[in-house]
Image 1 (spheres, helix red, strand yellow):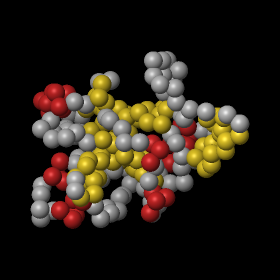
Image 2: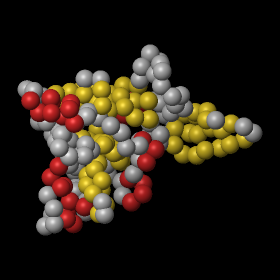
Image 3: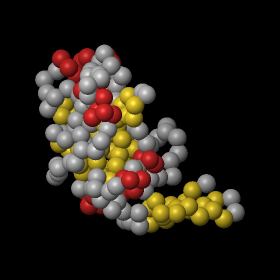
Length: 191
């Protein structure tokens, strides 16, 4: 399930002689996907209304992923083999990683470092890959599309003033994602 990844020029490559900060962006290319599913209506109770499908994915890592003494990274999503702007899935957002049902904090990162590995982590995100937004009157709709390529999930960390640092990704077969979110394409109503 895990494929190869062709690294792109990033802040890590540019700043390798200047700083060791890039070493703190963990890789997920060793992680093992354990589950991907839509959040149930029970899971969504008490949350802000989302018009997009909410997806949960969990994965195992055989090593600690977080350094409690640095800024904790977030997760970004991309289409693995696309290029340019077509690669980025901005609508999925930059999301936090959860461990044991709670966002990873510096205190949780210290605890994780002291535990036997592997540990299971969780990510939740909106599936926002769409073709168009049509508005008529007071409401609108969008057409959700299937992913055209595999989903790459990677840690992202700000590296100001340089571009962000990005770790090596966990690659998830697009057919798995499309099946979970499906049927695709389909219309969703928006405000």
